[in-house]
Length: 170
Image (cartoon, rainbow, N blue to C red):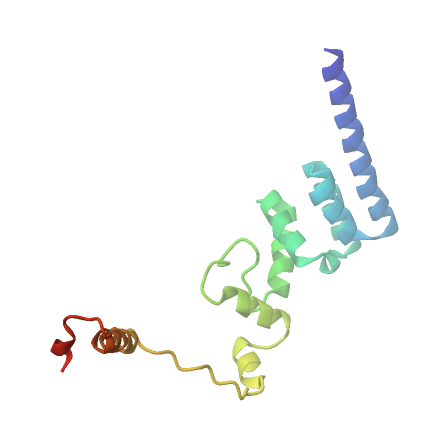
């Protein structure tokens, strides 16, 4: 019983330290850091709400890393905070932007996001690369390999001196 009480006391103390870190970042005006600490260290909805509300009040939602906005969108699925987060995501979005929760498995999605992050389209990236003089070696077809193997064995079979059936090779 005493061990369980001590473990609970340690968890509460750790949670309080994490909340103090969030508050410390908010006091310094480091809103993205406060949201990061709330999401990944404190992992408490109350700390995330406090950090997000302070960020909104300071008008600093534009300084928050976009992936953090997607997490906040998930944590606050409705209401005023969700509307503010979604408005910021929409403000930053490009036409080919998928976010971290949707269309990540569609063919070409990661290259489109990479290109969008670099400020150009995927087509311009591939067309702007310099042409290489490298030409891959031609691969033989299965039929060619089969024919060469058959001829090699036939030649070996027909040229062996001790082969009793070598007269069939003529």
